Length: 115
Image 1 (cartoon, rainbow, N blue to C red):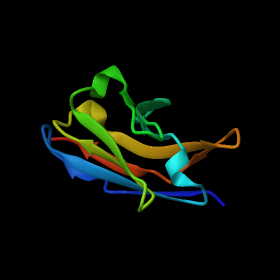
Image 2 (cartoon, rainbow, N blue to C red; image 1 turned 180 degrees about the vertical axis):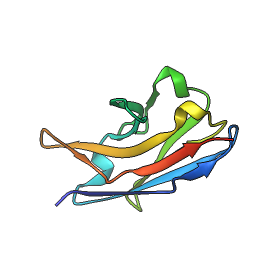
Image 3 (tube, rainbow, N blue to C red; image 1 turned 45 degrees about the vertical axis):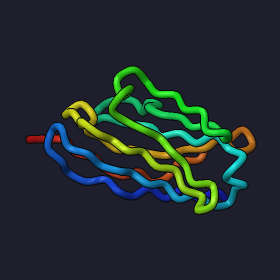
Image 4 (cartoon, helix red, strand yellow; image 1 turned 90 degrees about the horizontal axis):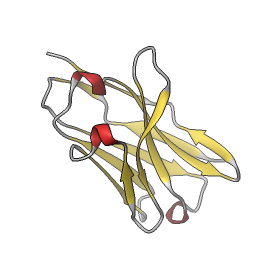
C-alpha cells in the first residue's frame, strides 16, 4: 500500500524559508521519480519540482533559484527547501508518485506566506 505523508508547512513572512518533508512507504522508493505539487487557493494543483531516481531535478519557472528538491533513498524521504518565499507561494503542497499507472498523493501541508 503506497503511502505519502507530508510535513513541515507553516506560516512565514515574505522572504522567509521553509523545508517540507515527505515520507514514502509501500514502494521501492529509490526507483521512483518523486514530485512536489502546489495548489494555490482557488487554483488547480500544479507541479513545481521533480526529482528522478538518479537525482536529476526539474523546476517550474516560478520557483527556479528559490526552491530545491532533494531525496534520501535510505530514509525514503523527499524534501523541498523553499527560500525567499513569496505570497504567491501560499497554498497546499503535496508530494506525489506515479506507481503502476496511478498517481498517489499525500494529504498535503499548508504553507502561508504573509506579512
